[in-house]
Amino acid sequence: MDIIFYLILGIVQGFTEPLPISSSGHLYLLGEIFNTHKFQDLNFEIFANFGSFLAILFIFRKEIIDLVTAFFTYIFKKEKRKENRGKFRYCWYLVISTIPVGIVGILLKDTIEEKLHNLTFLGIAFLITALMLFLIRNKNGKKEDKDITIGDAIVVGFFQMITIMPGISRSGTVLVACLLVGMSRKTALKYTFILYFPISLATMLLGVSDLVEAGNLATLIVPYLVGMGAAIIVTYFTYKWLSELVQKGKLWKFSIYCIALALFIFFYFR
Image 1: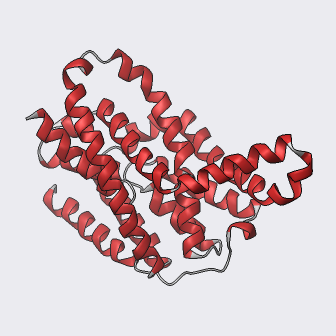
Image 2: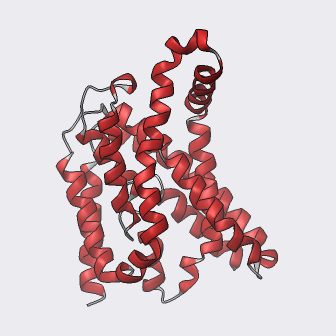
C-alpha cells in the first residue's frame, strides 16, 4: 500500500510541479480532502522534488552546461571574456532573481506558513494565480536572453518573493513576471525553469538534515524511490506539454482551472 500511495504522490508531484498551479497547494488540499497528513510527508517531498529537479535538469542539460562553461571561461580566460560576457551576465541575473526569495525564506518562511497555511488562504492563492495568468494571456515580448537587464532580474526576484506563501505557484508567478518585463514566451520559459535550479537545490540541501534524522527512512526507502521515479517521468512529459501551451499563448486555461479549484475549496469546506 505504501508503494501505491507514494507512486500516486509522485505522479501528483510530477504533474503539478512544472505547471502554474502550485504542487504544494495540491498536496495540502488532498490531505484535507482525505483527512490525512500523509500528503504532507516532508521527507518524501525531498525525494519528489529531487525527481522533478532531475527531469528539468535533463531537459535543460545543454543550456546549463553552456552557462556554467561560459561563466568559468569568463573568469579564468581573459582572452575569451568578450564572447562569454552575455552568458556570464545571464548567470548573475539568475543570482539576483534568487536573492529576494532566499532572504524572505530564511527570515519569514516559518511565520508565513504558520499564519497562512489554511484552506481559506489556499483558495485565495489559487484566485491570485488565476488572475495573474489571465492578465498575461496575450503577452509575448521580444526580449531574448541577451536583452535581459538587471532591472528585469530584480522585478522577477521580487515577484518570486510571493511564492513563499502557501499555494502560490513558483513557476506560474515567475513566468508571469518574465512576460511582464517583455521577454518572449520562449525566453520567459527558459528563464523560469533555469531559475528553478538554485531554489530547488537550496530547498533540498536544507531538508537533508531532516531526512537523515528520520526514523522511518529505512522502511520507506523503496516507496520513496518509486515515487521519485514517477516524479521524474511525469515532470518530464508535463514540462513538454507546458512548453507547447506557453508557445501557443494558452496559459489562460490554467486560470480557469485555478478558479474552479478555489470555488471547490470555498464551497466544499464551508
